[in-house]
Length: 136
Image 1 (cartoon, rainbow, N blue to C red):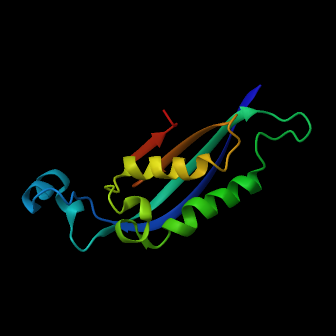
Image 2 (image 1 turned 30 degrees about the horizontal axis):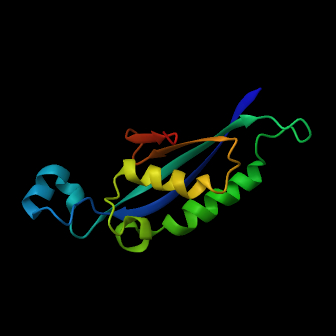
């Protein structure tokens, strides 16, 4: 039987949505106030779901403490109270939209999770705006 185990977490981060290869006018037209050259921030909420077979010996899909530590190592420590554009290497040349952030988080976690398990990451940029990535 397959079961999904989920853990929530949060981090606070600043970012600026813009493309270096566009004019300021084009960036403003597409990204509006999110293109503020002085950046802006969000209180991001994160839900990570791991789906897999229940281990008959432990009764776990994944030990929730292990999942907590992976989220801390791969998301909270590198992203919390950071400027995503300046402090997170993946965003040096990648626009830190919610869509790109959730994919980066999924990729950072994938190598730490049993390959037999599926991962689903949902990232809330605001309580009403959120994105989900399942690795496909």
